[in-house]
Length: 214
Image (tube, rainbow, N blue to C red; front, side):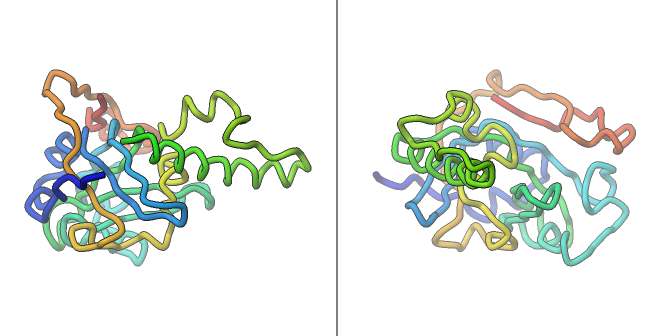
């Protein structure tokens, strides 16, 4: 298939809210052991740096973990939650200004990507089946819920697109294997806003409408 135009530095070197809204409908591309997978972004969240109580960098927390957020716009920031699931962010703004966009949900951009995503999710599910001494699932026989909720959460997105700690701190403007391209047209009327998820600790920042979805 012909590749669409990649997003350049100028796209990411803007504030995290603008970048988040305009990422909707764009295509996340990642080369995996099973082939290149493409996912259309359908839900994202903005994290607005050192003054945002929901951000990992709130109050100037610049650590080995959060360092990629301080790098130039277009840098990947991948971290673990619960010690087991990866979450994927893309840094916005410019060097030293740690705004970022959390990628919450994608849908397959094409049939082959859907097949690869399902196979990658099945690999994870079958590891659990093995521990339970149960029969593994196959592409033909797998839970309907797996197909329905293939990549509609930060952890599921990373599993479906094989995004791991090895993909942390990658310049997605320059990388040949991990980047974002133009995708489908999204009209402003198609974009909805809501509260960010899972940051109840963030006081008033928990109520900011910085989650955007189609």
